Image 1 (tube, rainbow, N blue to C red):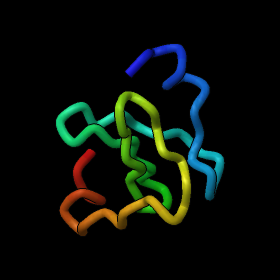
Image 2 (cartoon, rainbow, N blue to C red; image 1 turned 180 degrees about the vertical axis):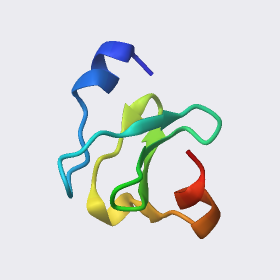
Image 3 (cartoon, helix red, strand yellow; image 1 turned 120 degrees about the vertical axis):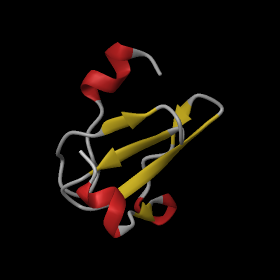
Length: 61
């Protein structure tokens, strides 16, 4: 994930920051408790494509 792109991306729900999870290839919004997939190097920032974080993932900083 390109750092410049990551710096300008925001959660489409709350407009807050997203964190890059390299292991799962996702962008995570802890405020909303969702993760957006990255497919073929392209972030899919659609509410319908987001998955809900588990309780453990929400607590993990």
